[in-house]
Length: 236
Image 1 (cartoon, helix red, strand yellow):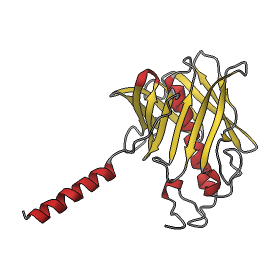
Image 2 (cartoon, rainbow, N blue to C red; image 1 turned 90 degrees about the vertical axis):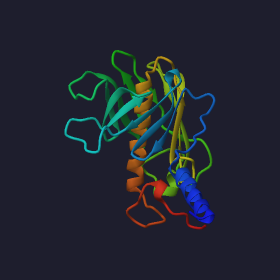
Image 3 (cartoon, helix red, strand yellow; image 1 turned 30 degrees about the horizontal axis):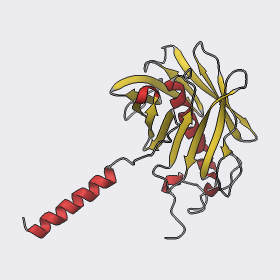
């Protein structure tokens, strides 16, 4: 093969490898939990015990009764997740008859979501609404009254409170098409909150952002919006 052809082939291979390589997501030093959206699920960048994990579909086809997602950490199946809207039920196995070990229950305040995090046999934790924690042109909280995809972009943070209402941690999410990942989640969570509950909270919040994006105007495409990561910049 001529030298020029070999160089072009090497360049094409390197370019393809870079395109396929997963994004590097910097994790905040104080975070005890971190995750980001990738393809059809979440990559868990930091889990309790210093592990990493993936939350994704168990297979190509989901049959009735099967989980929406499974959580795999270090080659081990850790838990299975059933999502119904923003409600998340967690079991240790992929059997719908196995005991529930954790659950996320959503509620809304003027369109802004709150989450109740409940482990089997443990006390509940609750979040406040997710308030905007930086500049943005939309509402001051993550809410269903957003009008366009531009309203949704930004950084949001909420307190995590114990059953007595005392703040014991926080959860954060960043949303935007020009970040290393379209959605980046992290949090500072108490040690008594199980890793599965942290992942389930991110999954519930991810589903809520899906709902909002599906019901607002995509200013780049007109009515019938697409997820933010597929939006096209107005200028180059």
